[in-house]
Image (cartoon, rainbow over the protein chains, first blue to last red):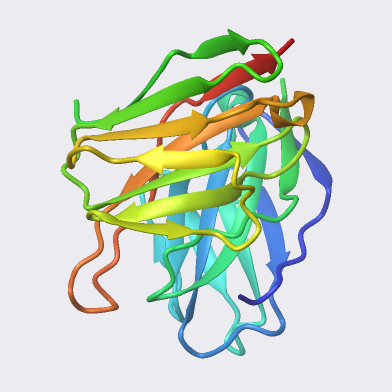
Length: 110
Length: 117
């Protein structure tokens, strides 16, 4: 699996958009970009995934660069409940495993 | 609501005393996973079941075993827990179809926090 690089931590103001970057410069053509988050003392929660095109769902938007070497997860209106560790994972479509990296600890402040 | 359930949420065991953690799911997913997450670390896959087929990760110690008696249930057995096995144990499920692109996301349970005394 391609390795991902994320900032260790970031702060965000409540009500503002949170933009979480992820570098995956060695990603291959059939690897998807997945985002999960883990709120303290809970199991990881799926947020969104994509291959080439930008994706949006009720939780977030995923912007993937044209060369697919990086992506950004956007939480449009961060709330205090969005405080969590956010994991960016690249994964082959036929690979069962989720290989978690260190993730980004996001703290949303009032 | 369909979900992944783990019992107990907190488990305390003694050094060397066998312990079993359980996971059940109402999603009817064909794949079940066990992850270990130590304090301040990312989750790490121990093994998974694809239907009845057991798939062990290469670096999972022999001390860890698993059973899946039916689609809904999966157990994690730690035969002789050591202090280093204290961690959060996460169960997850997914649905994987015949086509490689037919892969669902993984849904995680709340985890069982294991303390070894």
